[in-house]
Image (cartoon, rainbow, N blue to C red; front, side):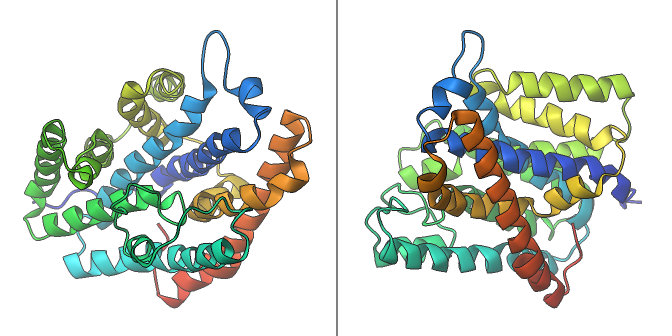
Length: 322
């Protein structure tokens, strides 16, 4: 009686497209930091700031994460869930963290290295915020620190009867967010930021959303992306609207877009290496040419990473594709 109807995997097709789009939005956001000419060309205008759109890619990722965890993993045992998450997230991230250490030592100027200490390396490998507030050695890994905290909470919720799990996670994250307004410790501030609520919003979507009229799905997509161009305090609701639209609208199956969705984790982690490596070659190009050339390199490297590293690792670890 407590069993919920499983989410059909064709409903995850739109989620895969959103994964690809969110990863490329983050790439775009970081492009703005690499070439000064790109910033006024693309991020500043009288009406909107598209850098906010790029920043919203992480918000979409967090909502998607909660959506997929509830859709696919809500009936897992805690141990099986944790092992699957570790095998999915850790190998590629550790490999790239090792590469970041090597590149920081060999080419510190190219990779804009900050001081690297043993404690910083340890924090990066353990998905723990560095006490001094620096990013992990692989910069996008800061969001994985929050992801891992959510996975830990989700695993604990799996000990509860199914009917309590969604609400238990929501209660903890809501309480933590409220506590975040009163705590002063940087570590406590990190784990109680409102971003954590986006995981639960994704879970709520997966639990309650079944089918929406096409016009409602389109309205959610268009309105959500438009809201991502506004101030960041709208981003949680905007990202939730985007995922609500993307998870319910019927879309044709496009192999190349699904492949980019599969490779979104590789895009997210490898793009910072590509941006740093290609900047000396492309930075004198016009802004648009720089963006296109760099994006092409990011996609090629990410697809190679996915096909040659990430996918074989997942197969070897007998992981089901999610």
